[in-house]
Image (cartoon, rainbow, N blue to C red; front, side, top):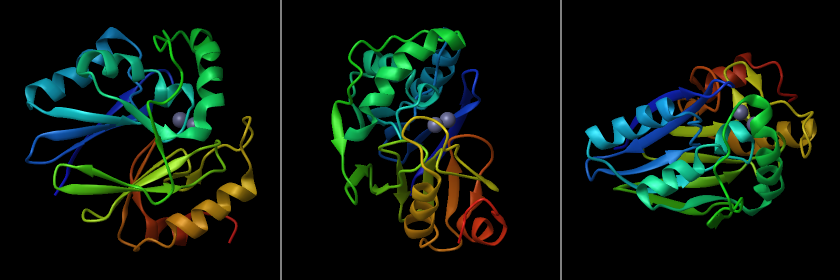
Length: 214
Ligand SMILES: [Zn+2]
Ligand SMILES: [Zn+2]
């Protein structure tokens, strides 16, 4: 079974997650570390637990979820995986980062590995299933840890809220359809780990999330 550690990074209070198990393999979801101090926090946890990063994954291409890509690639020699459709957002992120006081180290904006819908990623003895959940951004994915009953939703679904749809590539109807068809079909007791804010469950969001048009 996977264990999880979360960090809140950069001016957007973005959640970066590390998931790992007893094999010590770990995956970094949305590396948002944007300062040497934040990098130290992330690396300090990985190193003190003697974890072996095997991959970083971006749920989408917005700057707050991707600004730390280069740092983790450099430190651990790992690849960054994401849906191919995030590439335009990655190029925009490079331009936006300085406006938010963030240093954009990534030279090559493209993901190293392209993920597709329903693809399965192995982490130690567990798996993550890729669920395409566009609407907040193009190429947005969620990651479903079946055994653990966890889903990482990026900025698609939050506790009692949903992601903004007014950025380039966003669309409210598309987002609601993604949530209804790919997330609200998961078991009610699935824990939702979002890109911002606290965690919730699928059942609670079905009952209390009034932003999702049913
Ligand atoms: Zn976003
Ligand atoms: Zn975000």
